[in-house]
Image 1 (spheres, helix red, strand yellow):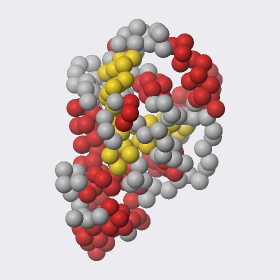
Image 2: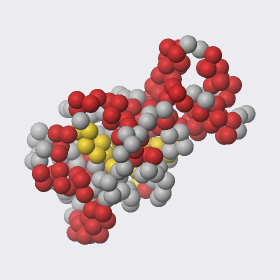
Image 3: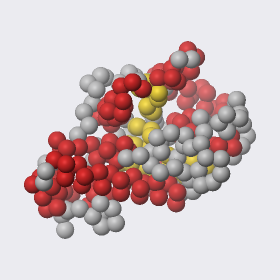
Length: 261
């Protein structure tokens, strides 16, 4: 059985195939998060009907990825308000066109991404968060589910796996948001119905390296990883793509098991 060190070393030998570089830009500080937490949260707590299960699964320090299903515009707010630490989301530049909304986004540390710069820029911005030992919020579905009937959960996109693989010791925590669609349904509700019950079910996290070596996960050992170095570039890409897809599918299955509708 491989040790963690031997598996990590074998994975590192493939770095040129999986590394997502940072943008090189320092993340802005988020003093607004603390201000809002200690002023706005006490005011909203008696009003907002939210139940959090498994909050202890969210690490209090170190890099972490919080992966949740996406049903409503209030989803990131629910995660940010409940995580007990600053959470940064990648937000499309369109969300920053409204001055008031843009101000809130910036003081809470949300990161603007440009549509015309493509997915690689977004992944590098995500890498900035993890490189700084921060908390990255992500919706693996890639968009808010627009289904009108259950099941609402969409297939996950592999960006979450790619960023986890690039920071293989980062804990990826699955989360299920239940009830946010009823709180604020897209294209119907202009304001959230704060009295509607929302449940956030947080599962136990796993790092990429833990998953990679687990027999029910990637089922890879150091020798198998080392053999990838002998393959052609396109063969390595195909092998890694298979791992990314499997990781993502199992993450989505975990979210479903936690109750994601």
